Image (cartoon, rainbow, N blue to C red; front, side, top):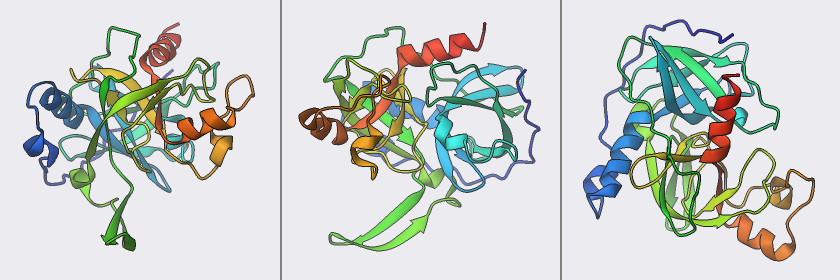
Length: 261
């Protein structure tokens, strides 16, 4: 049975219109994806960090957010806070799930009387190499550079909606075997710590995956273990580590269907 979140007297941050809305080169599909991303992407605050998520469903005043399991693993008992697209923050709780394949997916629930948009799922399970996709979320850190040198690192925990980021890119690889956690789709978009659990959207603004595995992880090849226990060969590893990775929509849909049984 789902743990129902208690509503929290929300903190309201000033709404900031993301820069990409003004600078989008093609105002058709790209604008639709950007607009959707800004309405369905949330930030999840845990006891020791933060991640991102996407609103997928509403029942009455209860909203469900899909995210990565590794985002919420550190404070399931104490709960979380969710920053919604209007700048409000609500108390939230993790929803117990059936996860026989140990996917890096989790559900979080919060309660609100506001009307928030839920993401639309892509009706096609197929993702094509070369397809344009958009990744959204809330980076945990802001790096200040002087040339190529990082001179300052700032936390974005108190930035509200100002931390929101959208990155465009393309699907580059679709693995024949699945990586641990359910990862299978490699894309060129850059995303950083704190954006894990955020949506991967197609040009129509439909959900095609959940991001969660960064480029060039510090674990090296040990971050890319297949579910059968093997690792990629050296040539494949070099390609794999240069991409960001997502759990594909077909896997996401199966995970959600498991919860309804």
